[in-house]
Structures are given as C-alpha cells and as structure tokens.
Image 1 (cartoon, rainbow, N blue to C red):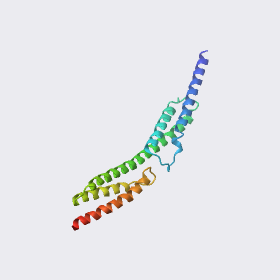
Image 2: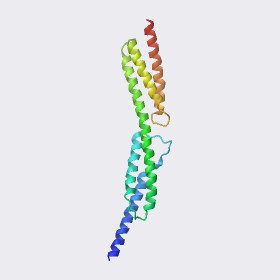
Image 3: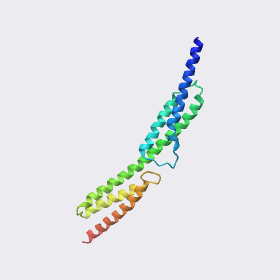
Image 4: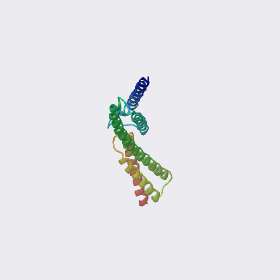
Length: 174
C-alpha cells in the first residue's frame, strides 16, 4: 500500500511538473514571436518580460526527478536567453523614447523663449536649445517606435533653427 502511495504521489508530481512546463510554453509564446526587427513600445516589451519571468519561475519549479526535467532545463536556457534579449530591447527602446522626449522638451523651451519679442540674448538661448534638440533627435536610429516621428521633428526643428538664426543675424544688423 505504501509503495502505491509513493507511486501515486510521483505521478501527481510529474503531472504538476508537466503542467508547469506547458504553462511556461504558453506564457512565453508571445515573447518568442519577436525577432531583431520587431518594433514595439516599451510597455509591450515589459509585458513580454513579465511573461518570460513567469515562465522561467515555472520552469525552475520543475523537480530534478521529473520525467520532463531535461526538456525543462533546455527550455529554461532558451527562456533566460530570450529574457536577456527582451531586457536589451527595453533599454534600447527606452533610450530612444527618452531622447525623443528630451528633444521635445528643449524645443518647447525654445518656443517659450520665442513667444515674446526676444532680444539677441534670448535668440541665442533659443538657438542653443533647438540645436540641442536636433542633436538629441540625431541620436535616435531606425528601429524604434519614435524613429519616424523623430525624423519629422528633425526637419521641423532644423527649419525653426534656421529661422531663429536668421532673426539673430537681423537683430545684430539693427
């Protein structure tokens, strides 16, 4: 009778481990559906990160004695590598988003300066802020959610900078 209980408990544990394995596969299926060309907002990358973390926890919970242990170990290695990649993509996307926000903020500051009749010192300050904004936009490569908007803004800010530089020259001629 004792042997049957041990056998039954082992079967239940194997079943639990198999459920954990398949649940981990299900959780991570979206995270593995991306490649190096996938462009997603940070919130989507964070969702994939959370799913991978849950999947990894499930795979780590599988007992060493489980029949599915070897498969779980292989899957765990793949999941950990994918989690590293997703975290890299989060940082990569966040850097671009932050650069875009910084550029917008600097352009907004320049706009505020230019709203009134700016003197030559204020024009120089606005010019510097626009140049900084342009420099931030130039740091954003292709492959981000803000890549296209940054190229549009780059042209706009360059036009605005040219106008400010023209005003600055005119103010010194007067």
